[in-house]
Image 1 (cartoon, rainbow, N blue to C red):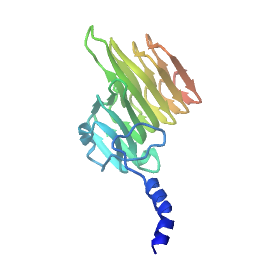
Image 2 (image 1 turned 180 degrees about the vertical axis):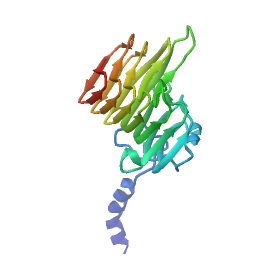
Image 3 (image 1 turned 135 degrees about the horizontal axis):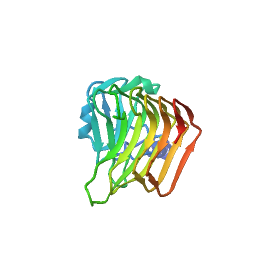
Image 4 (image 1 turned 45 degrees about the vertical axis):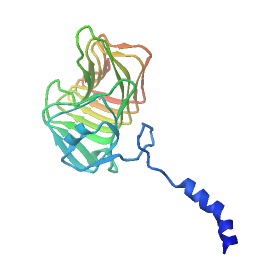
Length: 235
């Protein structure tokens, strides 16, 4: 029996070493599916108390007037089989995103819908700043989303004077807008990459608008997008 145990010991050690360990901190990767926190429909405002990790949303509707997610590093992902299974519905304002410098906020596999009309975007990368004060905010990644703003702007980068956004990516998403599908600027400053790739955009006015006065230090890449716009595809 003792010899049998010694014979099996290497196998037991290998099995032990291969057993997954739940990470304490979760960083962004395209394949990351670990959930730090799981929220149920109706309590999306609880996200204000979460500052790091992966927030998973169960299928259903999350209705809120507006929400501001700032000074934190988060991945917010829907657990449905498609983006339309998890719906964030904004009744008055925007879903505003402003990560800390060197940090990332990711939205993935969910739907963001605004019932407001006019210039209020469904998703807004926004930081007002203070006159004469320079400040950097981090990276925003929007991946596999359904953004429904049929009476307004769908997605907008609007950052104030002296504020710099490190990077912005929107990929593999369906964008429905009454006015502008994806807006960069005006007067916004981005030091890294802007990537707008493989999206379907239907807009009443302009599909993709960059500027006026937007500054991109590294490079802007717009590729593989299908755009239907009432006025201009890319401006």
